[in-house]
Amino acid sequence: EKKQLGGMCDFIHSSEYIFGILYIFTSKNNIFVHVTDISGKETIGRVSSGVVAKSKKEKKTNYSTMVASHIIASKCKSIGINALHVKIRARGGNHSRVISPIGHIVLRTFLRLGFKIGRIEDTTPSPTDGTRKKGGRRGRRV
Image 1 (cartoon, rainbow, N blue to C red):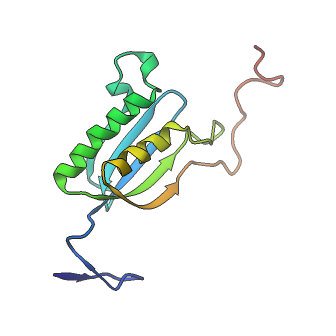
Image 2 (cartoon, helix red, strand yellow):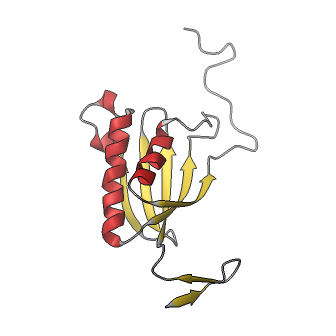
Image 3 (tube, helix red, strand yellow):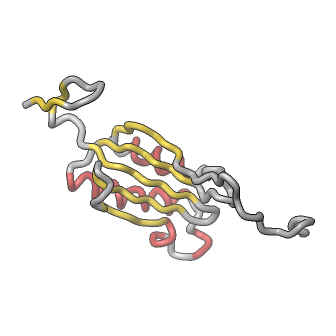
C-alpha cells in the first residue's frame, strides 16, 4: 500500500517510518525530554532527568538522562513510532544559549535504541533586544 505525499517526496510505503517530534530542553542543572505526534498536538510522553534522579545532585548526570530517554523510548515503541524529528533548545533569552553536552546524550540514546532521526532543529530563543543581564555593572564578583 502506497501513500502519496505532497512536496519533494513522491511515494513512500506507509509501513516504513512513523514520525514523532522529540523536544529536548537543556538547562544548567536539568534536562526535559518530550515526545509528541507529528502534528505536535498529542503528547506521547514527557519526563525530566530530575524525576528519574534519586537526589538533587544526580539531576545533571549522564545516567539519569539516559534513564529518562529509555522511559520515553519505550512509550514511543509501544505506540509504534520509529523515527523522530528533533527540536533541541537551551535556556536562551539573556541566559545561556549554549546547548549542554547532556542534550547530545539523549540523541545518542535514541539512536542506539534503533530510532531514525529526521531533521534536527535548534529552537533556542534569541532576543532581538533583550533585558539587562543579571550581575550588575561590575559583574559577578567571586
